[in-house]
Length: 503
Image (cartoon, rainbow, N blue to C red):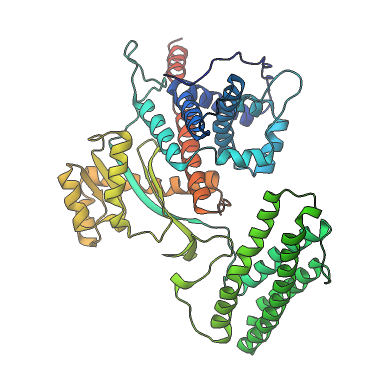
């Protein structure tokens, strides 16, 4: 039984006709097509229904929401879907997205916030809450529903459900991996001391602005002094006795950080004892104290790491390094590529089909296994998402090749388009037409990764915490697939072109 409550839509103004800008007209056409795909595929209704069902299950026993509450939750669920899609397509920050929603009638129409009279757009905080509206697992179902609808055929008309001219091909997929960079500083030893100083002093300044003060210089003075030391450390390598100079500057930085730590701890304890004298809620107080505690907990290890690297001259193992005071789940990823020997972040696996739709993705929280060990689980996820027996061929670079994978593809009766590691075997296979075509097409997967990272994820991705990054990847993949479908040729467009040529 559907949990969606019918309600009368608000009166919405007509979109203005804009001429003179081809780029705007093209983008308007894409957004209207994306709106149509959301409607024809049915994923929007399924998403809203799933959100309402999860919300009702989360309510306490005996708590009965009113019809008005249900309608409000439905409205926000629909807005969450559309705002997240537009946010990823535009590549804006939350603040910039909120401002552009207020400025543009087209964006208001797409997100469903347009109405006669006063227009109330989501704030930057509300947009951020929308990104966490559902769990990443529900986003997997949403993307799977969109993929399945793209291949569905209308029984009566025999046409594609999304009115596409060409059928979506899910029989051949190409896999590749990349690093989703985290927003951290490099190098990651003495830079951590600068990050700690800035965060602790900003929190201290916030507490002092609300009337709770200990005797100290202004917090901004400590930030300024640490910035000068960071610049001095940067220029040390240009001096003759660079190692000695780096040790001297680091000792100053450690002394400064200890003073900062003591001031922040005193203000933190003062806030805990006298928080009722401020205009903050207890939740706000817990958030400020939690931010301070998080830095203070990691600071001793960060100071030790900087000491080991610069003064002790000893290397720290990758698995023991603190790469960021704010991100716990990022790793050192050795890429071995020109300009990117080492990257900091999380490994991402994607699989795309011929038209560019992403059919599988996996953002690894822990250190990712070798590419060849990721193929089996990826195939299992794709078979679960788009149906068993759908995939007939798999392509990928040399990292995915292994004896176990060759046997796996043979067992599943899938064509092996993985580039072998032996150069002699690769040259031999390239003479075969099917393998040669798949190997040539594989280069486009690199471009797909670039589109996702630079246009949808943000490079670096600014979402903090592994759960937030997983949600960002899920929303980005959904928005990307919707954008790809919107750019494919429609039946009506093809028919109009044929009529024009006949005339």
